[in-house]
Length: 206
View 1 (cartoon, rainbow, N blue to C red):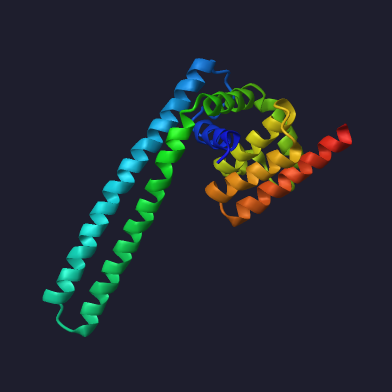
View 2: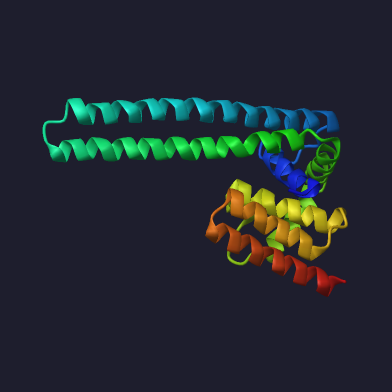
């Protein structure tokens, strides 16, 4: 993943921890919140591995029970199916945990942190103007009714377009990529549509 893409993701994880009101936080405060977000990811890795170990143990116990305590074939089959499901859950948890350490390592690079902090500072400082532009681009929606992560993805994209000289196409594509990871299919399409309207409005104003 490119440094700026990582920075956007780190900014998203950090912005979600900021106060909901656009109070003007000092850079040091935002930096500390960003570090807390990275530490939270590290804790998430540990928790995912611990939960995976618990589910593997439960799955093993259910397999053993299917051999020793099942009264009939049907109950044995149910126990085996439960063991398989627990094992699949454990594998999924481990898969998620394996991805995070690389992200945490790269997020500690200075260029990633610097650009993430620039995004966070810009969103916090210019939130009123960013939200006005987004509200004007929404159709039959209110900004404060959106899911927080979707709203923050939109804010990051608009902050980059308006204040950080990011090309519109790049900012929109990066926002859609974030939505793929943190939202759902409907959220991804919604974010793409809103940002296209933002881009069109900015072309008209220019």
